[in-house]
Image (cartoon, rainbow, N blue to C red):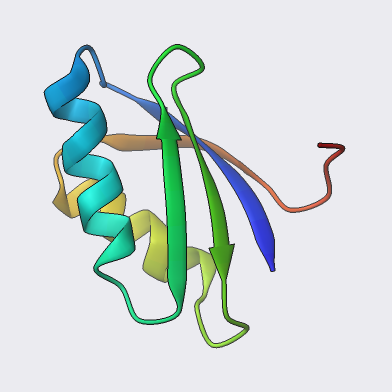
Length: 73
């Protein structure tokens, strides 16, 4: 399952790395964070819920503004 998560509060490379590390630490998740777009491109197993992703981003100190599951690359 692929998702794009729009994240607020990231301002620098440290923020980007922190969110990316937190998401990639989850079982079944591969994530790449784009600081310029304030978003994360996530590939996740079906066992990973939106709520789990949101909680992980929030625990890293940032907020989820939006989550897209149906998108064009």
